[in-house]
Length: 371
Image (cartoon, rainbow, N blue to C red; front, side):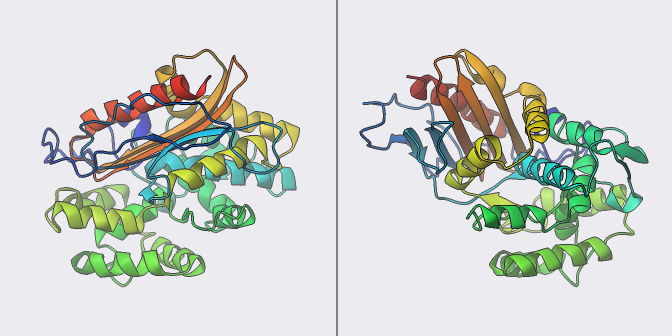
């Protein structure tokens, strides 16, 4: 999962953010989550038992079929488990940066082929080179296909850290929190900006951040960006090691801090947001085509390969970090069903095994809903 999934890692490097201390340790099952087919006259009569046994953390699933002509979010059928629990997103927030960039392209404030300077102060933890200047289109491709963090952060800051929030609010999805680029996320955990996030008091600082208004959170992220501009990627990487190695806090508290600092959404919110982005996005025909083309490349099409039913189209993106894994996507089947799904996991202590379950759930969702 690391090459295309992990939004919070360097790869390949000894300091991979994959919690080597917990790999192979299987905690007692915290939630033996069972997916329930929500009763509706429009839904399939029954659902198979989903393959969730053995998941080591919290898991949330929401998936629907919906008419592409619908102007309101009115699912025809749906399956769910913990659809309204909030989960950290890792790299699953990146399509919202793409959408915001394409809106700016349509507005004429950004050119798809404009070349943007990549400042040293915007470099994030990545596998591979940064470059000094890159077209918007290339940054977007790297962000979605390779989950490249620096490309994401440059675009995020170009459109404005508050841009995704403004779009989500216009959709009535103000419960989603997408305010933090990847570099600033790690700076928050690093202890390098103690006036905002003190490594010795991250529990309280993270909780205060999570409970703040969106405007307050955006202002805090901007402050972290300014205060942390002088630190190199290597400095940030080394400074976050104690947090990721559980040397600062125990496992449960570490997961609490990640929940409070990372970008977050519920599975239900994410599915509605994907419906907006794919079927009600308000983009020009050209930008809509560019959005769909790029989303087809999401994470090197890892999730597409989990789907057995014949498809006319698929687009999606996932993410992972310490104890977390998330996938979301939209697919049009050859039977004519339009399926949107979000499957989120957190507090995972056996990430390899839990990712196998998450991937099997993608398969199950399409097998179940493509009736």
